[in-house]
Structure formats: structure tokens, C-alpha cells
Length: 342
Image 1 (cartoon, rainbow, N blue to C red):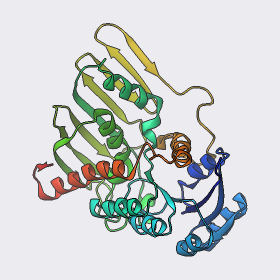
Image 2: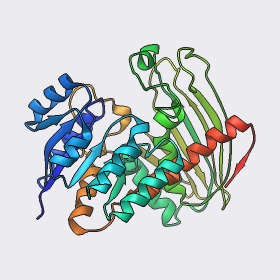
Image 3: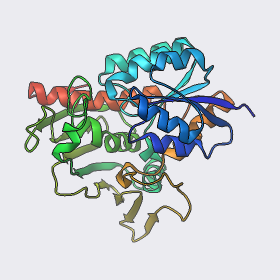
């Protein structure tokens, strides 16, 4: 079995999800980490007994890496992925793949040219609830999807933005509640529906975060070619982080997904449930927000299984681009105040 030498760029809030996941895979070893803040890089490297860098290109040049995890602000993803690909290093990138489809396409093209694998974190696809919904839609037991309801009600206080040099900025984050928090759920639903988008029509606003210029509200419609549609309402100024509400209304039943679980009530009277099993998820440590989902370890393990066998990972750069393209056109629709056809 090949042993993979792994580097991680970015030691922020999402780092424990990746580090803990890698620690449960025998075939990998974190040999280096990188963060622009020297004290953070040094402290993290000491904990994981590896080398540290403050310049990611130097790390890529010196460490003979097999793969790199990119956990940095959104706008840095394309540049870092491309630099890794040029050095024949496989890439696993946090969501979103990029801020705009053009940069995402460039990442995919250069990774393909250099014959390296590109994966994009979309961990919520692996939740038991999402897996059950996908299975019952795919096997036809639910019939056609008529419509989907997506409601996100999160809480982001002023400090969430003011303590960061990139959160809440259009040029570095790409937007607000849509591209940062809600992209996960749009990705899951697009994966479950598995159809081409016909058009999007949407509105965005900033209602309670005057300190930034990105949206804290987005609402609208994603319409698919075969008739299904997603009606969504997304905010991050609720008093607390409520569970995301997802419902799929289908010909033969309804699906309700809450956090990692789901219940399907068929009109025939039959019901199915899915929920995490005891011990299914690893411990990521203190401070990890539960609404991120707990399936990073499943996706990261799958990524390295793909590298071992030489196949593409289940969630590729192309999948990341598809989701980003929907988000990008929602922003475009809101800006132009009209329907955007695909």
C-alpha cells in the first residue's frame, strides 16, 4: 500500500476536520503544514509533529508531497491548486472550489493537464439522510421530484466579519450567506436531483450586517429541465444557528432532512429513516461547529482510496464547478434583476 505524504495549507477553523480525518487513515502522514501567521503555523506543527512553513510555494517545492489540502480563503484556492498541480501534487480543496467559474475551470484544466486528481469538499453528500434521499430518488421509489424547499437560518454576529480580513468581502470570499454557508445544501440537492438546471431567478440583500457589503439574505428559485425546482430562503441573521430545513415533495412521498438524518413518508403508508449510527463519526475536537456536518472523514478517506486505485474521487473538481455555477448565476440574477437561463 502506498504511503501518501500530505501537506496542509491553512490552519484556521476547518483545519481540525482535515487533520483529525487524516490521522485515522494509515496510508497518509501529515509531513508539513503552512499558515501565513508564523505563531499559528509553529504551534500547529508542534502538535502534529511535522514541519511548518509560512510560504506555501516553498512547502510545495521542498516536501515531495503526494497531495495537498487547501483550507484557505476562497480567492486563494485557484492559485494554490494550480501551483500544486504544476508540481504533480494531487489536490483536495475546501468549498467553494473558487469564487467564479472561470477560475474553477482553469483549476480543472491544469490539474487534468498535469494528470493529478482534484477533489472538492462537499462532505454533506455523505450524511446518512442525504444518502437515503439520493438512493430513493435514484431507484425511482419516490417517483419524480415535484419541488424542494430549502430554508437556512443561521446566526453570524458582527464579530464573525470584523475579526476576519476576508470574510464578508466580495473579492476574497465572493459573497455571504449563499457562497459561504448555503452552498453545501445547494450542492447536496443538486446532486440528489441529478438534472440540468434550466434557469435561476433570485434576489439578495444585506439587512442586518452594515459592516460588510455581502448578502445576509438570498431567496429565489432553481428550476431544472425535467420539472423539479428548489425554492430557497437563506439568512444568517437569525438569533441562533437553527437546523437547516429541507423537504423534497415527490410523486410517491415526501423527504425531510434535518442535520444528518432523514425521514421518508411514502404515500403508500411505508416510512424509511436514516440517522448516524453510534461511532460512525470520528471526534474532531472542541470548537468544531456541528452544522458543518461530520462527514469530512468519510470524504477524505474516499479521496485517498481513489488515489490508491488511480481512479477519480467521487466528488471531483467538475462537481465543484457545477455547484459553483449555480451559485454564480444566482448572484448574476440578483444583480441584473432578471431570470438567468442556462
